[in-house]
Length: 74
Image 1: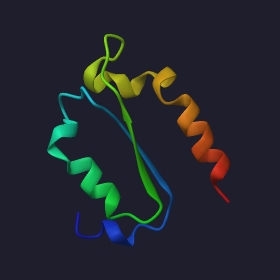
Image 2: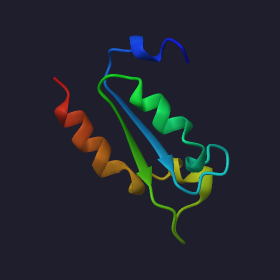
Image 3: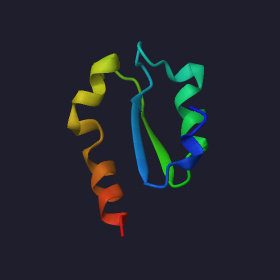
């Protein structure tokens, strides 16, 4: 964690608000992303369609954001 600020690549981190393994409420992911230049966090809102930690394995929740992210790359 102390070296996060050295990352120069653009980063898109994806998490689900109902992720039981990496709960959004801890703030760990947001804090880590704040330390990385050119990083952003996509937080998928929890719903009846999400599946906790398994949500990130379902591209329908993040496909459009990933497409935008890739199009912005130099």
